[in-house]
Image (cartoon, rainbow, N blue to C red; front, top):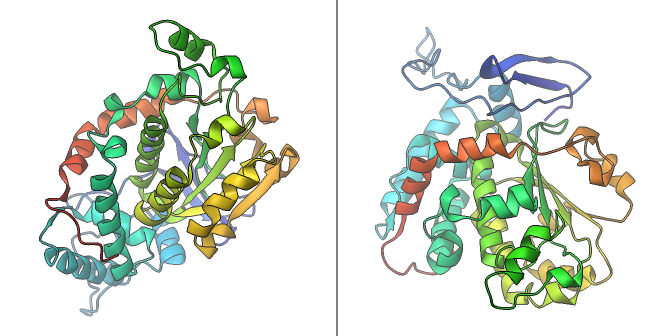
Length: 369
């Protein structure tokens, strides 16, 4: 995507982009939601796929102009490519009778765009995704806002945060805090009050099992990932991930076992239809090398190249991510995250999550991918 593309949104006025023009100052603004594609009944040009000469149009007419530019430049998406890919993907799905996945066009496009319209690759991603759901019920069963510890993990401790604005390339910044608090916060002793009290007083941005289990942490993260992939614009731009490992120690290695690391890597890399563009690791101590050595064999070469280990020099992060997307505790200007907006959108998608929860393999999936 050229660095001269500029998109701007105004939250109070319209969900559509307020401008789309060439400019050297590249800034993206994200309000309560990205522009949504119009339905066939109200999309300008959506009712016809041909020009006056009867030739098929190469333009995806039901996207705002800004997203058409992104779709074509990032993914090679045109009306013809999209229609043919959807037809091929539906045919492949019809040949997978054990998989219940009666998805509409918007849902299928999530997988196609994540794999740049490589139809067999998108089909394999769908199969891996639903196989992962079947094999990991603790992470996926009845997944929705009301079934995850959103208040504790997000509002109280900011273990998972998602920027409302985007970086200069239009990508949201997802931040994960995988470090821990001081040792006295780590008790998991039984009893009603000690663990709860410590969870309440544990510093923000620190994870331990008194806040939530590792699987519950995964669920919160997956919910945020789905929040991202449901948006047309982020299907095209991808996402930037910042991972904070401050105070990572032996306590964490007891939880981040090779099995759990492999499970998470395979899920995010191979099963989730999300384009990971960069991963910035900050505050990583020496013990992180052990964790990364465990993860690296499971990472594809392309993704390994997108990992940037920044250590404790946060100036490096400031050179990569705009200050207004970096929290104040890291030297940025972001005062607080607006969880209200994300929570409202997640609540509004209850029926969508319910539909996704109804999909899946009706019998054991064959290990063909």
